[in-house]
Image (cartoon, rainbow, N blue to C red; front, side, top):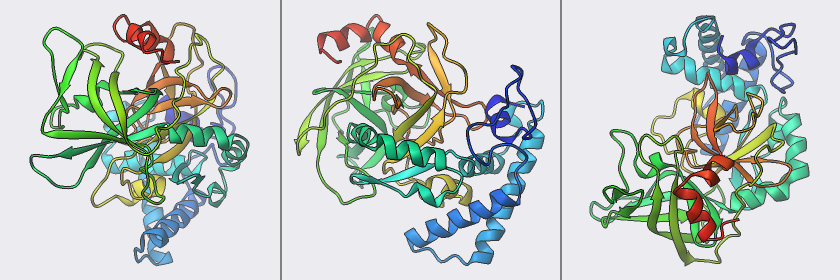
Amino acid sequence: MTSRIGRFFVPPSGRGADGMLERAGGENAGGMPGPADADLIAERLLREAGQTGRSLARPEAQGLADRIVSDATRAVLALDGAPDWRLDASQTAALEAVIHTRGRPALRVFDTVFEDIRSDPHSSLWATVLTIHEQRLRATCNATAALRVQDTLLGGEPFVQGTAILLAPGLALTNRHVIFPPVGGLALARRFPGTTRAALKSSLTLTLDFAHDAGTPRPPKMRVTGVVFVAETADPVDAALLTVEPLEGTPPVHIALSALADPALDRLYIVGHPGHMFNVPDDVQTVFGTPDGRKRLSFGELMVPWESGAAEIVHDASTIGGYSGAAVMGFGDGEVHALHYWGDPTYGNRAVVAARIRAHPMLGPLLVAARAP
């Protein structure tokens, strides 16, 4: 069974290869998906329906929850020694929904407060962490922005293409694939041939909205003015560095990119902007509510022990499309320890470590020249 799934669904008496109990840190961790998970999922669906004005009766919610747990059970059985591509979309989403009930919440952000985590009874660990570190979490949220795109040629409403973090007063960091998404996505710039620089498309206006959350609309916002670095396609450092300037409101305080080669990172959090979805599956609503591009705070743990010199980390915080470009943060120092770039519900989520970003031959000097901390 793949490592992330094994962490959450190994029987309570099961032990990993190192002889340690694989409990994943949640009070409800261990064992196959079952009725207790279904009850928690039903409650989550009812809360989400109440917040969005959707009509949902308790028997219907329970029926949906039972179906999600059934899909998750089939997925766990299918993954017993098999590759994750054997799962269909509903099984993958169902696994994420059950994992969410076992202590991996994704919370809405409202201005300066967070969604009440106490409504998830198996997240008491994270409720305590949030209480202790709330000021630091809020600072990270304030320095994390939705990258919003306005097509000035075709018109329409602006949309969120990913997440970016403010590293210095005029510099923001995101992923390469946020600027140049895979086939079918909208490229936001054009490369200068033979370089790691790019020019923004003249038909697009890019804005960093640091207040794009579930609270009231407000500043600050910043305008993206250029792309001074974007990694080449084959570069394992999936990163892009943007120049930005204030558009309205006082620019937020930036957050530091860690200089530590071996940070004491175990439990972690990530702030991102889950992309808007139409006809949201109930499985996804269980974890993220209605993905609308607005800010969410996700908690998790490091899945693989930190290795000195490692290029990336693997974590299990709940993510979805739109978290790309988000900072992976530790609770001890409030610094950016990695840049999230890819998520997988079975194997875990991956992020480029800060030391590798600093050591990059093209990106590193730009950060130093700009005096990014």
